[in-house]
Image 1 (cartoon, one colour):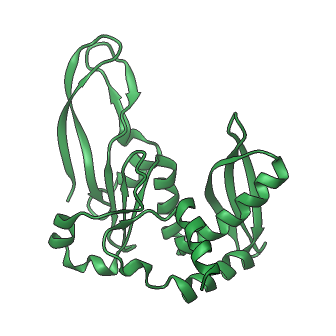
Image 2: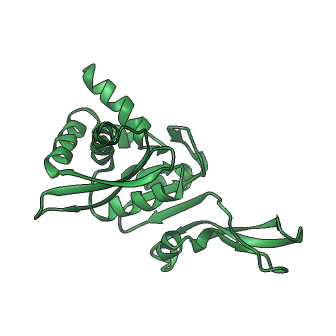
Length: 219
C-alpha cells in the first residue's frame, strides 16, 4: 500500500509556505503509475500554489515491485553500504526472498529497476561496469564520475553503459562483450552468492564493486 506524508515547503521564489504530499513508498501492483512517475520524475516535482514556481523536491522513496521480487530504497546522497529498517523487516517476514537495495541518486534508482526487470544480476553488472569504467578512464584520459547500464544485445553479444567523464561530466557510451558480464556472474556465484542473505538494503554500486574485487583477489 502507498504511504505518503504531508510536509510544509517554503517557496524559494515568493517565500509562501504551503503543504504538499510526498509519496514515501508504493508498490507497482497497486500503484500502476508509480514506475512512470519515477522515470519522468514527476514523483519529485513540486509546484508553488501561489506563484507557480516549480522545482524538483528530492525525498526518500521506497519502490516495491512485488512481481519482480525486488525493493529499492532511494535515499538522496546516501553513503552507507547498508541500511537496515527493523520495523520493515519485522512487518514483512518474507523479505529474505526479496532483493533489497538502497541507492543514492535518481539515475541509480532507474538503473536498478531496469536491471532487475531485465533479469540481470546487479552484482555482476556492477563488477562489469567497474571494469569497463577503468577502460573509459584510460581511453578518455579523464576521471569517470558515474556510470549506468543502458542495454544489452544477445545477438550482437554486447552490453552497454553510459558514463559521465571529465570536469564537464560529458556523456560517454561504452560497450563490451557479454562474456565480460558472464565472467563477472561466475565470480559472483563463486564468492558473493550469500550477499543477499545479509539483512537490510544493500548499496550495490561502484564502491561495492571496488571492495568486492579486492576481496576476490584475496581469496
